[in-house]
Length: 86
Image (cartoon, rainbow, N blue to C red; front, side, top):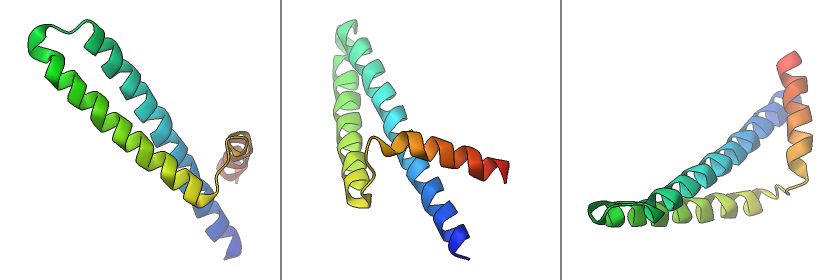
């Protein structure tokens, strides 16, 4: 039973880290698109940038509240491989 709880916790942490990575990617793309946007799309990309920044701030807050540290990412990768192997 305790193993299942730990496994679920690890999966949730991995999903959170994946969300951060994806949001960073979306923010990067929105910034690049903003740089080359035609006048009609400037507002659209600026809203995307603002939304992605807000989402990233929220996700980082969640990471801090859960006590996930950057150096834990490698440990999570290892643990994920172990879980998938089981």
